[in-house]
Structure formats: structure tokens, C-alpha cells
Amino acid sequence: MAQMTPEIMTALRAGRIFPLATASRDGEPNVAPMGGVFARDPETIWIGNQFMKASIQNVLENPRACLYVWGPGITGCYKIKGDVKVKTKGKDYETMKEQVAKAKPGLICRSLLVLKVTEVYECMPGEHAGDRLI
Ligand SMILES: Cc1cc2nc3c(=O)[nH]c(=O)nc-3n(C[C@H](O)[C@H](O)[C@H](O)COP(=O)(O)O)c2cc1C
Image 1: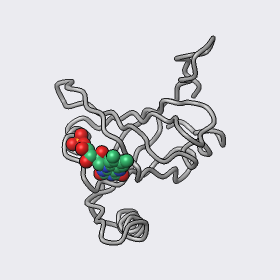
Image 2 (image 1 turned 90 degrees about the vertical axis):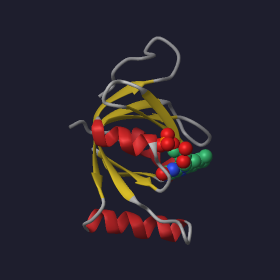
Image 3 (image 1 turned 135 degrees about the vertical axis):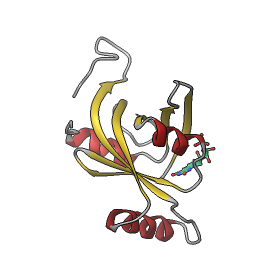
């Protein structure tokens, strides 16, 4: 696994919406906006599945995903790739379910996507655009 730097963790915590890219087993791409994205520790990002259809189907059959980190309040621009495990029970899932319900009463977290970071890339235009950072 890769370790996100404090700058990348700060960018994730400052952002509101993150496009999540996935692909089916046979390579059909998908992207969807996600707000329930939380940097848990330097190698782990939690994403709440409240409304996913293609995204959840994709990570179940092809457990890789890519998050794009840029927008208001964010310093820098990053592309984060990782391995995804889907949890529908256990302590972590229950914690996320509570967090989602607290953020928006009535909203139900159907499953928790645990993304273990494997790579981070620079997305800012310029000399280092596209370079692998981690
Ligand atoms: C601003 C915004 C934030 C969203 N956040 C989430 C989220 O955290 N979790 C989720 O499951 N869906 C979220 N959605 C809804 C999904 O992006 C939407 O249901 C999408 O159609 C799911 O796409 P999919 O079928 O490609 O997985 C959000 C949508 C918007 C517009």
C-alpha cells in the first residue's frame, strides 16, 4: 500500500465532491460524483454507498477505483488509485452508517467502500503533470 502525504490528506478533507471512476470486469468505464468520502488514515479512504448502481457493481467485479481530488477549498490536484473492499457488516461499516446518518438524517449507507491507496498522481498542469507522486 501507499501512504498519502499530509498535503493529500488535507486536500481530501477540504474537498466536498470527488468524481469516483470505476470499470466493469470487461473494461466499461464509469464515473460518478461522491460526497461521502473520508480520509481515514494515510493509506485508507472510506466512501459511502448510498445511491451507487454501476459503481458498486463495478467494484464488486473489478475491485479497483480512482478518485479525482480537486475543487473549491482544495490546494493541489491529485488522482488517487486504490484497491477496494466492500463491507456490509462489522465495526467499520456500522461507523460509516452512523456517520452518514448523522450528516444527513434519513440517509442510509448501504455499504462501505474501503479504498486502500496504491498510487497517487499529480494532476496540476505543468512540468510534473501526470507524474506519479507516491
Ligand atoms: C454532489 C453529489 C454527491 C453525491 N455523493 C454520493 C455519495 O457519497 N455516495 C453515493 O452512493 N452516491 C452519491 N451521489 C449520487 C451518485 O453520484 C449517483 O447516484 C450516481 O448516479 C451513482 O452512479 P452509478 O450508478 O454510476 O454508481 C452523489 C451525487 C451528487 C450529485
